[in-house]
Image (cartoon, rainbow, N blue to C red; front, top):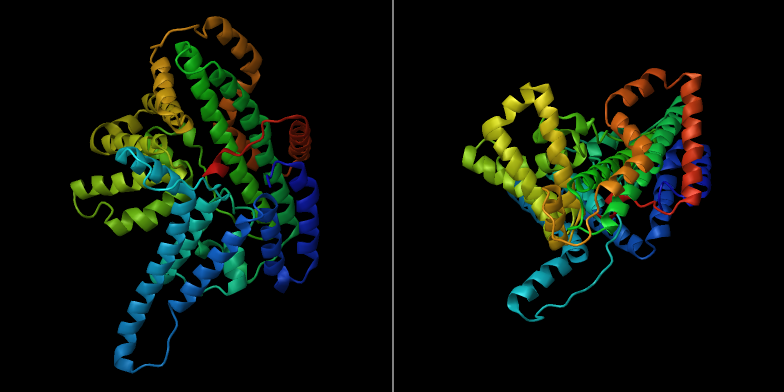
Length: 473
């Protein structure tokens, strides 16, 4: 079920919120869990069983990790340490095993069979469960935090299941660590003010998704229909710019809606974006983009590998591992690995050579970042390596022949999308967010958000281009 769907906006959400608000506070976790399973099950009726199984297995292993059977005092510590390691190992095998089977098996098998020149392993062709990358990382973070002693109070079954399945962040993040919501899991008050602010945030996020991401996505789709290899260099860059806007407002809009829903439910969902397109380096861009994912890899991969504490060579290796995994986390294809390794290369160069110099120059830093980011998104967007190479060649002014999509189409594109492009440029700056926080309680801002909401509903009803790009991850 999409947040930007009539079913969610006018059936699921109103009914759920009425029930959630009228039941006694001690039953709200149960209602939230039940509602979240319904929310997930509408779109994934079979994979909801996988989600429930994953929750039960991880909860059981988290409890086994701290189970203390009767044993002699002198052996108790050694046995407890072995038990914690065994529980963590089994959890990681289960979680990443399930993720591998559903997301990476076919990719691995196709490459193994290709190298062998024969079909030695079967292709499963399994559908990808929605949000499996997100909820797997949340479960792993909980088990690791338990293992490292960072969870002061372990969750009960209902609390743990609610934390994993909570529908605002279940299928597209942000990736929430248990410590960020543990207090609210145990007890939370929902004030009228929270409901009001949550609705405002939700309306703003819905507008970002439907009125900006969906609309500018049609420009990207239109340009792609011409086919890579036949694009004028300026049209190719316009397409890259359109996709850069689409993925930004798509994911940012979803994250803002998740934050709004969290407020309505009595939670604080962490912020996932911090004006990333205003960065002055690629390293700064990633610190501002998908903040919770970057934090997850830093806390659970980069630092345990040694971070930057074991010399420059080891630091480079650790960055390589993190960025290879970051790329593959987004998708099981070579372009995603190439995308991740591209970030690794550029960020490594920034750290060792020109990074500080670039960040000191506001103009050069912004130009440098705004030129590189669309290139990285093209690598991210096009999974076919040949088409990817052709599109990148177009961006460099190199063409493979045929009818060229040139200046005539460019003028038409700019005419049809000029207002939308200007709006996108404005909304990637910090100013709209500042205006929102300054005036969110004024009558004209409330009226503006109502207009955005109903305009978005209209576009949802009459439109057809309404995907969430990050659902496939």
